[in-house]
Image (cartoon, rainbow, N blue to C red; front, top):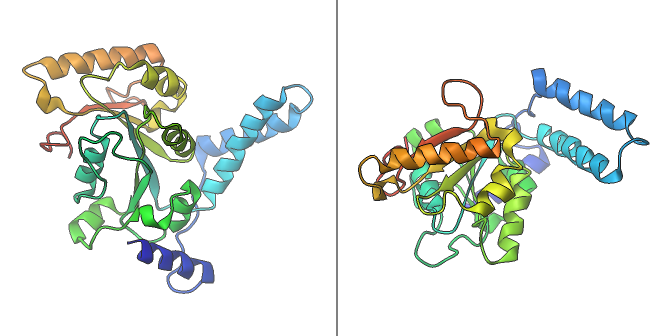
Length: 263
């Protein structure tokens, strides 16, 4: 898989073979907001502190870098705490065992990227994921039709005791197009998740999925009760919920182990 992706990058860099995917088109509200931010930065250089200007500049730079790359691909990170089952969900979505799962913690020590169509190499390069951690599943017409254009990234545990694991999570979350937060019945209210990630990212609710995994462990109506409490916590975090067709975070319940809700 790594060799295939390396060959793809080499082909793209030489300009041979199939044409690279077209760049991402920033249209509508996003384009107007970026233009307004750029104008605001220009007008505020003598009025705002350097840190605020630097952060605004970073947003503009990252938007420009993403725009130059494929508009046919969506990069989605799967994030979660130790033992939440995010790697199991990663494998369930991929339809093949790609990411290591097990009782040893933390299992995911480095981000792993998986893609199902050509042209994603530049996007994965931007994430800083080396070739040995890139996967391209064996040819499967059904999977490729369903997952074409998807780049799925399994992140290290965000609550890992290893500082470098958390640093990887923080770095990549700033670069992906969307994120799936995987929580479990025991740690869905964990303060680290809500205070370090969900609350600061509340303005990005429309590109977030919050998934309650391991519902097979919950008897009777317990899954609904935990989901309601999870929604309450998200509301307190300021995360808008897209429950009735309005924009906001999607909150789902599933079991990566049994397959319930994965579809």
